[in-house]
Image 1 (cartoon, helix red, strand yellow):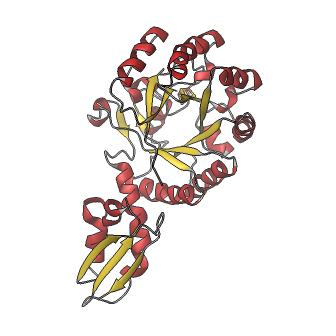
Image 2 (cartoon, helix red, strand yellow):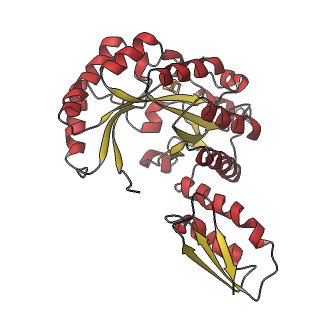
Length: 337
Ligand code: SF4
């Protein structure tokens, strides 16, 4: 099957017109960008990006970072208008936006359709009402479900983003959020472990000892569980963890939480580690093992810093990984010699 290469041209509108203050959010620090591009500047960003993306890519313009549909209608339209010539001349295939579940209604969806928006991503964060309340989200689970139903009914591709480790969150509420995201018909998701960012209400709670973030180990384990659920249910995981930016990695804004430069790699490696556990329990120290895994999974199966291979070497004399195009997702077969 031919793989379609995809690229987004991201236009960050941090905190623009968002009337809320979620407990964890400081969009300026997270995106490391204080200035909001004007529609004119958005056009320049698009042109600049188009000049560097190969022609065989499927390209979308993505208005990210804030809550797009919280903006006054005329401002939303001024950004969407900028994108239209690029759709008309075929250089981009559509537009994606991210927004809040409680800023979706028929008028907004009709307008987005008119401007050829194709994908809508909602920050769901959790589907547990208590977690949503403690996180200052200002909407409940019903708002997520209603918005998801409407977006699906209008024929947009739905994405639902989630966080884990929010105040009040447990492994069970995290798993339930993932199950709900699948049940609400999302085609894509993004998974963000909660980090304590400076100048947020969560930072205050953390400093007062009223909030403890997940450890890196917990975050990797929880994310592995929900990642596998999404893969099994054909929900594409577009992102795992925040992309490290310079200010973040220098700890300028990051106060605490399970941040790791290679968080996604840790998760994918851990998923394979869990898969290999049954063959690690065998008593075969005199034998070699050849493990067949799906194509493109070699790196993850060997594990982050060869972790999985090293663990298998405690059971086997030698470990050889080979790919088999008949295998999918986290299937594997093996033989001894
Ligand atoms: S709705 Fe989004 S942009 Fe607004 S405060 Fe919450 S996370 Fe930040």
